[in-house]
Image (cartoon, rainbow, N blue to C red; front, side, top):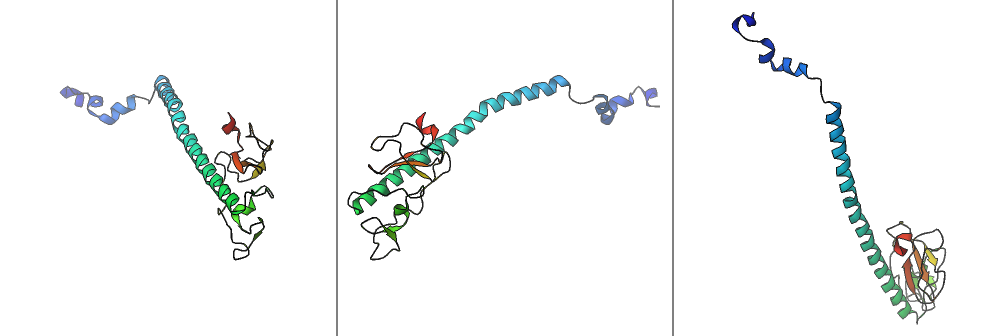
Length: 167
């Protein structure tokens, strides 16, 4: 009946127009996928770079904190350094006497604690402490498989024990 008046029903009805098209073509979908892959390839390295920078900054901060507290320990204990016990440095986290023995804080154990806990190495989240391979020399690589830190009892120096540090 509408044709009588010169009108085509399909052209005046938007719902009828949308039925004529079946969706996206394969080429359109592939173009979108390629664009998303290119964007991901560009953006992922930009997101990872700040993460590594944050880990580097945290590592430097933790090293500085531990090194300064180790030096304070050495001052309080007439030049002697804490000893590694069970992959840790308990003399830094507990009260000590002048000989470095740990105990309850008070007049018998007047020194420390120097830090609340051994901070984790941000690259492996380990707080374990391992002795350096060659005492008296800075390490040139990772020692053992505990991660965390390398410590030289002879010098009182502490170093990261993760492969990223030695690249």
